[in-house]
Image (cartoon, rainbow, N blue to C red; front, side, top):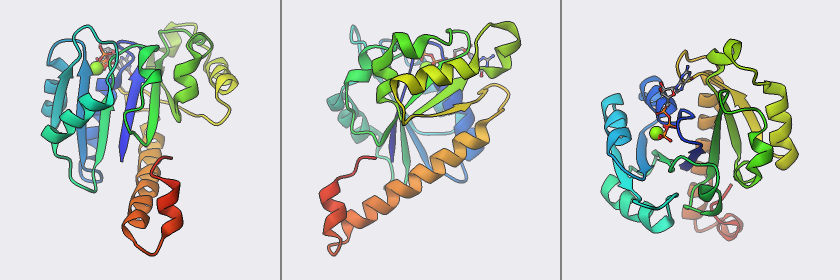
Length: 209
Ligand SMILES: Nc1nc2c(ncn2[C@@H]2O[C@H](COP(=O)(O)OP(=O)(O)OP(=O)(O)O)[C@@H](O)[C@H]2O)c(=O)[nH]1
Ligand SMILES: [Mg+2]
């Protein structure tokens, strides 16, 4: 299974991945593709957390594209049963437009950004399967209205799911891990169906969720 993690810069994508790797290393084989305009910083953080990572630098580019992911995957060599996390370049605009072959986009919105962001950047939230509202440990210090943020996300994408988490304290991460396990099972059964010559219907439906 492959997930495309998108957010504005600094919403907490890498921190969430570090924590997920530490908490889930025995349950899920995680491989990470790190997209940033410059530096190898996030790739180093992921490897220090205990998962294989390949860093892709996009230079002037504001998003990853599928050919960059293909080259990154050649280097990363994820095992067939693994979960590949693609951390996209931080911004809420360009990454919405590019299909990287992922099963799902996960949009991370932190509570310091304002609860109106789903309305102002609708393409990103429309493309997302899951919204993680991160940094909820900071809620006492900001005027972010969680219910309004969820309502705004649903306004632009009525089928989206939303969870509240803190990648720092771990609050709410159990629900994120449960979502991951459920989606991985679903992806695995579709992959199994594709490999089974008797299940033509599943092949015709393709591999996307
Ligand atoms: N208080 C708090 N801080 C957090 C949380 N998650 C991340 N941070 C902090 O937010 C800052 C940015 O986190 P990163 O994980 O680097 O964010 P990112 O989305 O990967 O950033 P880019 O890769 O640059 O787009 C760091 O200082 C983190 O420690 C959280 O849940 N609570
Ligand atoms: Mg990062």
